[in-house]
Amino acid sequence: MSELKIIQRPDELLLEVHVVPRASRTKVLGVHDGRLKVALEAPPVDGEANAALIAFFAKLLKQPKRNVTLVRGDTSRHKQLALRGVSEPELRALLR
Image (cartoon, rainbow, N blue to C red; front, side, top):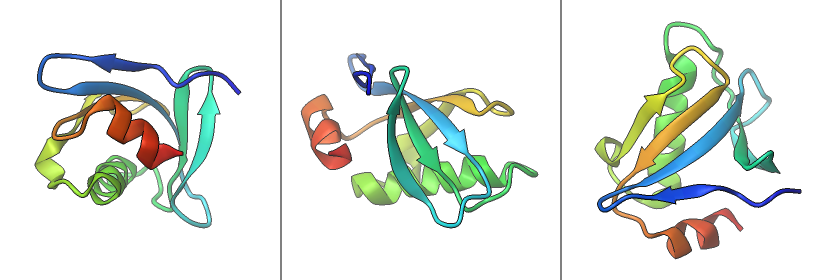
């Protein structure tokens, strides 16, 4: 397993995510090639998987959805999220 890459910006963290849609349940699967691999119950149709990903991270981080933004990868399985209101050590602890 490789190390999770998190980019620190002044007011947010950038996190690379690999999404697996249409899973039996939504959960973190681990780290693969520096990306956090996340299984989502939602299908990749009409933005449902993106909305589910944002809702999942908001709940995990105990932050409002507005603090989780999809930066890149709207129609791809490889996405980049901007996370506000959480520090890198807090994020790593939550993902352990």
